[in-house]
Length: 196
Image (cartoon, rainbow, N blue to C red; front, top):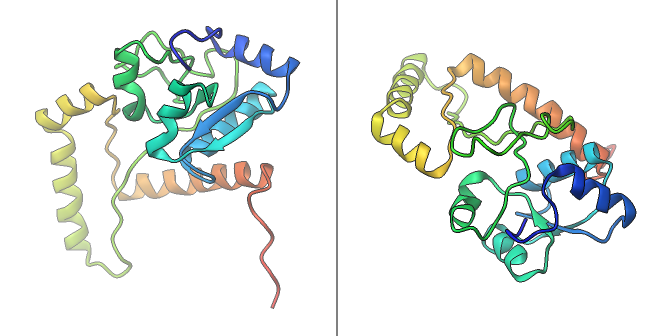
């Protein structure tokens, strides 16, 4: 939210939202994007009905700064510089635990709302890639992710580094796919497959 926002936490946002449904505007990176899905999940947990603005990654921050949107969902890396410049104030994260870069910002769960939607990245290879090649890539990625240079960058921009091996990442993807499907179905973003 803007640094001068009238909301100090999720409860104050939810309280206003409850008295004026579908009037607050929440910006995200685009329909079906991770930031849109996170917004849908949190708004459901808050019991809020808002207007979602699929502004795109480049415009998302500007919509809040200009007043076009009341709030936004963004990865920390997309908002941290404006938080540091005191242009934005963070009400919450949707992570499972507090981020060390912003330790004073509580999670939604800490504030009493069941919403965890963490953004993550991974590397995939085509089916049939030889195990030896996958092992070399996995080892190189683990080494790079643990390097001091990468860890320093991560701390500066707000990344949480938690390298996973292939089996762990596969399990995470399956779990997150189920979560995303439930969010999208709940929001009416998925249609039934056509028969044929």
